[in-house]
Image (cartoon, rainbow, N blue to C red; front, side, top):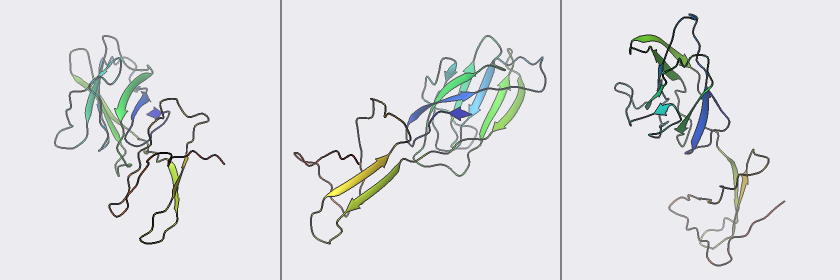
Length: 173
């Protein structure tokens, strides 16, 4: 499994290529079981669908890749929503089915971590006084994508954040 990026609480594309030791096997359906906290959108790719189902009695989301041709040896792409934090279990489960629906193989694939954005918060910490707050975000992208337009700050209940008037200023160092 190889996503290009894996930020928290985001819909990402993941690349997958499945092979077997038996070259004559023809699998037309792959069942993907995600690690806990990952979720599949209903239409999770050109060949992928999900119906909000979970694997057996777990909280692991289930999706299906289907084709009239064998899926083995092809670069497959699907979309998944990442959790807020990296789960303790990162293993993906994969089951392969033949054209008539018989289980032909199963396997496991190592997963990937949810990569948090590097952030720093600077403020004058004097109890009972209003203070300016500086937030420094570090992206590991050479140029941020145009769709990065919303910044959501979550503060503890004891703090009150406000961005009124011209209070929001961009700083470059």
